[in-house]
Length: 323
Image (cartoon, rainbow, N blue to C red; front, side, top):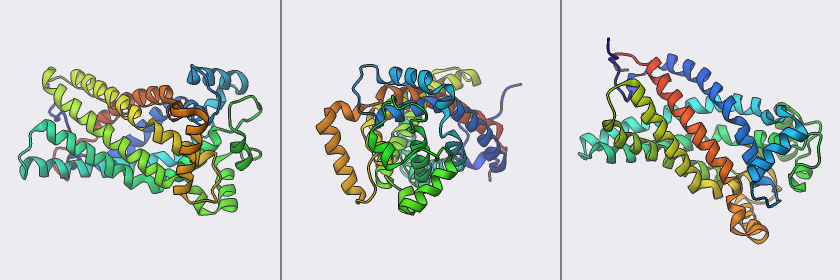
């Protein structure tokens, strides 16, 4: 018997409790697989040494000097913060896409490809903006945990990162969270808020716009089978991940350095301009592409896993009647 579920399941066809339950379990599993790459990317971005194979060298150093366990430094904070953020993100994205796509088709008479691109761009942008209040503090705490030198001073972490944000005994997310509140106030948890918006909103918009367009173009070219559609989703996610990473790595570098290295007593606009100036003066244009390889691998791999997982979760949460 064939599968009666549509290929592209819209927000109004999802059983929300089932969707959030499956999403929590599945996205946590995906996050655990991709987290080490994200940690390596962060370490590379805040480092100062110039290396040809930065990401590979950093991964080797972490495993050799700190052990495999260090690759999951800060994971608990990321998991606890990301999961609710992910649900907010997906809810905002899907509801926006449904509204925009309906408007584009019924009121503007646009074709499927154009509708997919615009609804993906707007859905991704709105979703990212809606989650920054939750995700910026998670980023700040998890990234500071990521760059702690632990037992070995040979790791390539700038001295300002360790002096401004001391490691011992702040080895847990809770301890570091309280330390930031006590020493910097709530403002410390929102370091890089503006830069995060400037980084994640375009990245999310580009990702969903590219993914939706690729899926719309490639979908009609493959047989009407679930396996073929999963392959299309995976390929679309991979392309979207590479495109979004290549366009937004400079902003991600700036955001990461502001949140982990730069002192917080100045305005964010001042921090933003000063970070750009320092990067340019000390490392040139290559400083703005630090960790691009790791970021592309991270986003590419994460994109494939996330979109395949997401499509699976949507199918598991499908209901026949509209909500």
